[in-house]
Amino acid sequence: MIAKYCRWAFAILALLWPLGGQAWAQAAPAPRQFGLIEIGGSGVKASVVELSTPSPAGEASAIDLKFVRRYPIQNVDPAFKENVPKVAMVIDCLVTDLRARYRLEPLQIYIIAASGLNAGQAGSALRVAVDGIVAGRAGAMTFVSVQEQAQFGFNGVVNCARLAHRRQQTVFIDVGSSEIVAAAAGARSGACGTEHIAALNFGFGVKTAQRAANGHAPTPGQGSDASAIDERIALALREGAQRALRRPRVYFGGGIVWTIATMLHPNQGASYVRLDQGDLARMRAQLEADPLCLTDPAMALRADPECKFVDVNFSAVEAVDQRLRAATDHREIVTSIYTREQLIAGTDILLSLVTQLNLENSEFFFARPALNAWIIGFLLAQESGPQQGEGQAGLAGQNN
Image 1 (cartoon, one colour):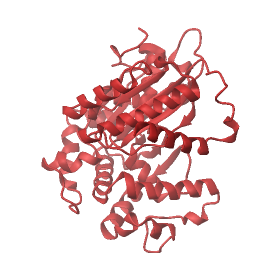
Image 2 (cartoon, one colour; image 1 turned 45 degrees about the vertical axis):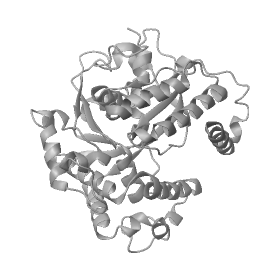
Image 3 (tube, one colour; image 1 turned 45 degrees about the horizontal axis):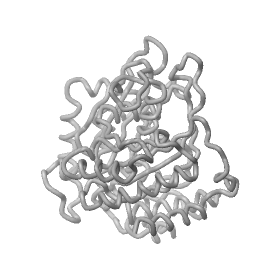
Image 4 (tube, helix red, strand yellow; image 1 turned 30 degrees about the horizontal axis):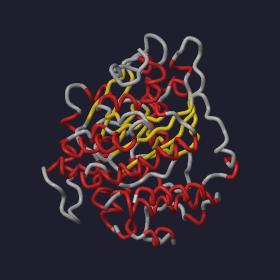
């Protein structure tokens, strides 16, 4: 079964691979190239990145990176024990391809799992299955803590190489499927990357919002309990956290924010898509009033006048590749990633965060780099040592 899946996956990858990369099989690997496999609440993501050469002093601010390849996300929920064999199979295929295609050594391949998955039998089963199937071919799977995930996410998005001037004015909020985390940098007294990163865990995520609110799984069609979400967020923001996270600029990450940006602004493929409270309110109202537009992609693709959440007809998007990507993303959202109830819960979470953090007058954006942010922050921590922020001591492979 695994071999059959691998053959199928590699055939698809070969068809999608750009013509400019026909010599990959013979090419030697870049000296600082890494394979990153991220296991999160919505599935498995993988990428290949290349780090620039740091300065002789090894300063964090000198390290930059570029993406060589992003693999398509595999939408299999690892939080359920019955899905663990599927997750392991996907990772086996990815590791095989990373080693064959890019000639990566085992310690050049990192497998990182989100903090919210490190609980109960599923977490233990995931570690055993993944480490067993990739033994000797990749680094051991690592669960990051919530604190590390927030800090790595901040350093991955508001990185010293390109956005050092934004670090003190920005809060990064990752609205994930299994957890919501936020991070902001304190005052800088030395080089960029040495400042304290304050991090906060809200204790639930988009796909666990209803369960976190009422103690059991939601019934189909139940929708979101917005007041319970408000209470959970208010509880997390006690003891001064609200003031520490209130900044004039907000970078949002997470699949739900990508979803809203894709559905409301399909013509914007930029790295940073500006959103506002009106966008969130419009998304929420459309979900409540006419869910058919979000569960029937054909209606949106026809730019049905009743589908108010689509502000631009896909066919009017000038760039063909961008139009196809937006249409494909929309189909994936409504068929593979979120249920209507989860879309509502995610939108309620964002509205509550904006209100309770008093961000109405802040500029906020969907940060496309945030889709890979915390695993990038993890890699930067391994390669630069403790200079990329606090809270990273004791991670396997760190240069102390």
